[in-house]
Length: 351
Figure 1 (tube, rainbow, N blue to C red):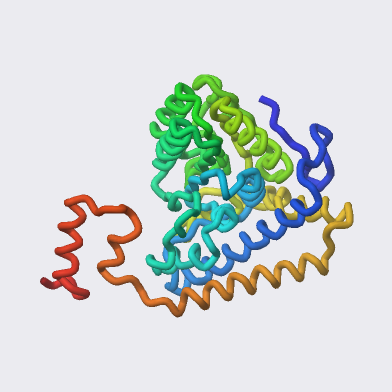
Figure 2: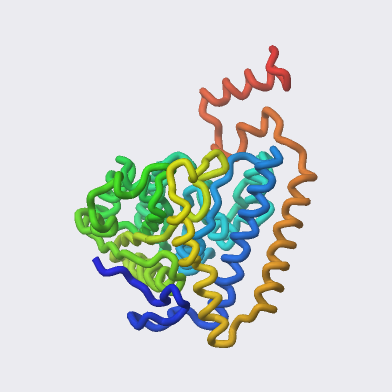
């Protein structure tokens, strides 16, 4: 399967298609990717100090995440994230302070605001894919013109949830865009040990809808493929699977040490395909970017993350009662019982 590429590793147009973003969108995309790096740096530091929970950095995958997310209309479309779509979630309406609050354990503040078309971040591998299909099916049944975009990795594509969800999505022709982030490592398992297929995008054919392989470090290619898939969904033509071929430049999450299973030379090679550097070269060449602009925007996004952290640091930690909030509109009987037992036991756990 041919891999869609618009912008090559040198930051030059590759000739397969013109640049799919306008000038304002290119600047916006750079800002989102730089914000993503700033979030990574801050939350990793907080985790190392014991002030945040386990964190999965986006580093290396910014173009795949931001490029696809920019094809959505947050006022119309739904997003179903996995565990490392932080910049996409912020763009879609989950404010930066709420994202940080989730990692810092401030559960009440971390809730998704009413009216934001976003499902909670999902770390359980692949379980969000059936949810996304159900959401898209519901939109179709209600005749609501909107698309659903769901993110997952190549490891999740080996789960039964993926295959069952794709089968139902194809049969019901739901308005769904599946973003398969193939970063080549499912924690410590290489993609070559996950599937013998030359292309994961080719799996879509078996479910009755298109699949496209994209250079996931090329934000123009990601945006172009995602925009076409969203438009297709809105026209009532069903799902699209986009395999974004990228690389996880850092660890799987803060509990992981990739040097135990991955060669340093492989990481260095991936660094030469850095999606931020690629877009920066192009934007500089056409006069949209410069070293001064880069430094200024980095300082701005770092200040935004710092301000969000300060806000979260002043919030009270959650109570036992808070653990049961923001999941169900009405607690099921089993959880009502557990809530009562928890409150009776008190902070010490002794009833």
